[in-house]
Length: 294
Image (cartoon, rainbow, N blue to C red):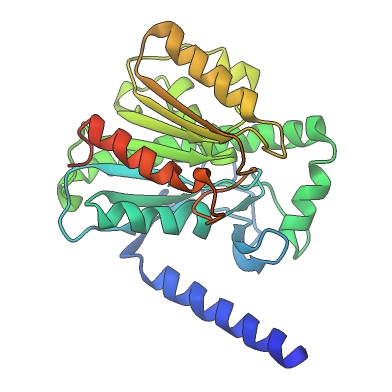
């Protein structure tokens, strides 16, 4: 049994190396320390989480972008914000795997590693679940980091537009997609953004849980929105997706909502042999509809 466990661990590590090596480059979003976290001195780390059954990144202090370039860029760029309760990043299932799929269709994809709450143990997933037992306390703890992460997303949008020629990107085709906490991060760039040049052209929210304060903010301009969630979300966040849909609908801005009966929270690119597995195909159809994919 011990030998089998060692073999599984080695295989998982090799898979991680192969996945990470597929990125074309890593871009640091800031020169020096990011504003607001200048005194953060802990080290970014990554591990396979048996609890979440996927690879997670934690203790991010220096935000960066993992760049995935398509062979034939179609002009569209999408910044991907993985979820993880503002304490971890589900870097594969909600980041790298999404980026690879997009790049295979001609989209230049950027996985955003945004700033996170400091994990004080070497088991960030367990620490996060313990913190979520008191949802209000965790929200207060993460509120400041949420704003920082939102600024990281805005900075990422600015970087992509400023370097559009290098990547073969149309500056009017820069979008964002976020999962869970990552959905809040990308919505910060849409709903809490006073700089028009840093607004995305389109957005997608996957099983997000934006705060009432964020939902109360005005939509600055017409930004098409795609939303997907599952009714059996363990964190009971499906109503937040419905509220987000209703907000866009009232303005008569383009919005599309998919709520699956089963799928749970954090389905991402996981295969469950359920209808929810097709969410990515629906997202792809949506991109084609708005001419972000051919």
